[in-house]
Image 1: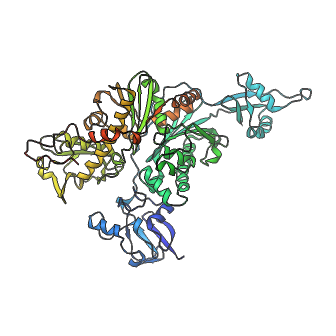
Image 2: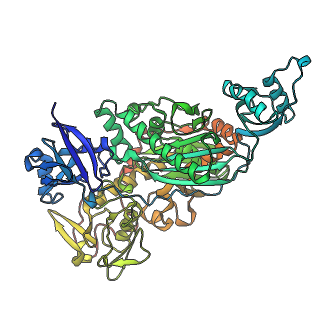
Image 3: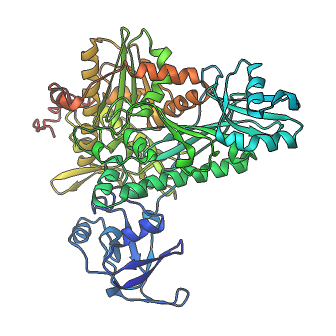
Length: 636
């Protein structure tokens, strides 16, 4: 097979490719910074590239037009639809026929997300699984038939600890005793196993809580002696290059042999890099990182553990493992201590994961004895309801619309993305606020680079369009209310929000489907538990943190929930993992209560479709038959 040289600019990343491969495949393999939300299936049209033809002395390459294959049918359709400009190609549909210098335009590169996964206060006692004990062993005498490992166990008994040394600690024990006048720091796990021996010093042990989101990773490091949060960091999830949402990643695995190993390797490599940065920042050694507890949705959970998630991509959504799971850190190669342990919180079901159980742990006392709904909105909305001593959980297939995917101008929450929207009720003039700019913008971007509209902005623009009468309750535009802001597109209309950012009729449809699915899931839970009124609604996760309760109420995703009872609780999933790192009693408590949670499978409930259809409307919008004399149109 003929090999060709590929140079990606502006990064300068070099790679080799076989004849007939597409550029997207090579970019993935080389770690090139490139957008794609469909996993290279030609659907999102975001992996746009430009070919730099001619002689490149710098790279010692000559590139010709015929070094790329002919335009594919997908590219021709994209050009016809105005989504692909002249001179550009789609990386996932461009076949390699020769040496190439490929330019990744600015709008095709991944941008660092505005990651909102800050820690919050944890209400738990300090009782970690890892504890340190300073032990002074007596000088041995021949008549005593001395055994140092026994002497160490006897020294620990003075602390009320009965523990036996591991093989790892026994290897180090005698030399450490000889070098430090019979004094050592003993590292004990779960009150029963001596996992390491340290020289006498003021060093501490540390535990890690890891939240593996489909878009971002959040890492929190705690001092296990004091309970203090000493380090936190958030980064993009590198698996995004294989697909924007979890189902795209499962699809990638199904279509590419060994794909699960690539996704597992990507996540572990990123965690290893974050831990290395943490050790440098804190000035600590690898052997001090002794515990890591992770949370994530079922697919992220499985991939982190190295489990193939394909069965989760199709009914009956079978889990490989559901309960609390732990394994030696040596199996993960992430830069933890040799004797460290890696664990994952338990899952509830095929679409209700460890992120939900982590969030529930942080709110368990708040929900007890009350009617409280806990919601984490993502590609699948995970919902839990407590009522009269019972707790039930379900997931609703909301799709990725609230995260920016399936929206014509949708983007992730990156610098330049619209995150807030207001529309003047009289003039119908929109005002927007973008990430990275404190000012509100109107009519034009005032030299700001607006990249698109992210989840919270999508949420707000839909509510604003309804509130000011620019669309009716069926979701159809009322273009006569502000004709200067509407443009016809085929047989439909689109609303100009600002500059070249439009809201299309198909965008409204995507949001309707998402909000109706969540609304229907909540209805099923409340009916199942016989809950007629909610005391409180708790929104978890990065997306929920950025939602305004007023808009949550206006758009109608939570049936019967006024804004006064809606609260954001931040990254509760990560904080749940942190609680189990800091307090082994919380771990035991969670394991016990998760087994009592009742799981509702929305796809199997006959009433789901009825609730879904009934929730499609926008409650604050004018009715479809308005005073303008328009004929009542069919709801989309």
